Length: 390
Image (cartoon, rainbow, N blue to C red; front, side, top):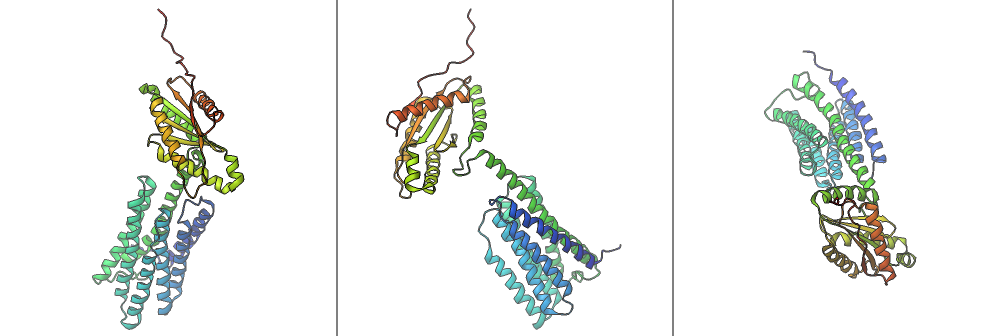
């Protein structure tokens, strides 16, 4: 069996890792800020490349050998930090520092005080295995059930098994753990390990791309300030609820809310405070709604609430609850009130535009009657389909 040359493997994997670090950092600069961890993974690859180059150049220098191991440990530990940031967890900096300090102290001891190559391999394997297990745990606890997550986790598991196998061989006194040696396992580990580092990077990019897709889809249907539905998102939800209404023969009610004298709030307190008021309206409405209800911002200070399977009496109860919540004083927000128009849809033949117009007319009636109140749309749309005359 012809085994690959270790130096060739190191060179090729180093070049590819360097290229991947550029790809990751470019993604960090261009992806939305919600997608974190790319910068840490890019820096991790740079450190791993630097460690490998230092390892190849160390010759007989124990100082350079120890430094190479410390730098590579920094790189692997940064993949943990990057993965934790991606899943919006608090970074395990204590684990990061504990790992590289252990490597520096213990490897230094078994380099100069009691030289032992096998012990150094065992120590390094335990530390690296611990880092991989931490990433696996983060993926398992926080990843979604999608191919990208399974792909990333599987690659990390394979690498953890390889590292664990090498550590086990070292602990039992195996002689096939020198990566620059001619043993079959050493050559296999060297090829697989460096290849898997690149594959794990691809795996991380896969979950990042998946997150990018979700983020862009969410942005297309959500208002960026209040994180409520925008017009497009509201229309999509209405189509689904309307189909259910037609199938089940139920009612729907629409609330059209508008902040009273919102321009005065902006003029008196500034637009930054005005934005806080808009966010506060969205949050207070969400607290007063049921889980099945939907709220959207239609632009400016106007919000629309859709109450599926809700008749007028129940809708008015929810309307009063929303107004009570908004009237409650909050120290960080200037006082404000809202006017609300209520329109009940009792026919599946009525269009979205029609019920919005009715709710809008009711809203303006509330404003004309003094604001800080609600009014109910009086007109009722009759079904288009009528029974045939006998």
